Image (cartoon, rainbow, N blue to C red; front, side, top):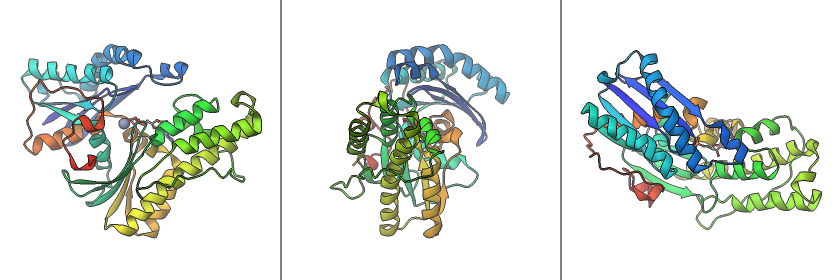
Length: 342
Ligand code: KG4
Ligand code: ZN
């Protein structure tokens, strides 16, 4: 069984091939040019997906030594994401399925992230606590099976990755903020600024917009404006902000482990590449004797391997989709697993 996966929900074009349950290729082409605009420009993203998708598919097939006519299943991200970007990958996948007369499975991008730990050799065990931290979403979930997910909390304002991106822009480090903040914070080993950690009404929810405002106030009070921050102070601000985000995330994970029975913990999504967050969760997992699964960097950020994996699971469970299935921009617009939205 050869599965083709396509991911184009934001600024990564990715194509993966799973052959007989083994991942053969996972190619990721990142649209670096968005950094010149300080964030992802949707129209430019769609155009770049259009240009790169075909050559990337050809490349993936040749790297996997599989010809197009040997593909048995075609999967693509249907949402959530930028609608124009999603339409490029989804329409391509549907057209390919139509012309090859092969089944097509649309995949929810967040579901892709939630199960991305299964791409690793050490896999999560059900039920597992899943912290999804990406540019668009922050969710704390209990994943009980392939089809049963309980939502514990979500962000009431900015997503964790979004907070990294906004603060990075604020202090002049640019986009994408996560890796830039992590890298500059690494050199700082001294006292941290005590930025606040929001307490939400619902105990497992998150809030990051107050933290972003606190960073802004600190800059205004101490330097007047971000242009006047001495380069030597940037690591302190970045490290203090990063520590606060990590603390907010880890606090809720700790409360959830204490409250619910879980066998493992899985940290997924682009922000899962953050070393401090990974290290803190490692300590927590060790303390509570739980297995921790964090996908390698290739599978933390947006990638087609997780889409192909999830698509194959849905296909094997007997699901069938028509080619009139449409792309959707928001998480709640459509998903296979309804409960985690409630
Ligand atoms: O999952 P992802 O690739 O795309 C979305 O579905 O949103 O996540 C991208 C987000 C960006 O906000 C980026 O700044 C953040 O992940 N990110 C990080 C790190 N690497 C990427 N945040 C913190 N630390 C990192 N090392
Ligand atoms: Zn993502």
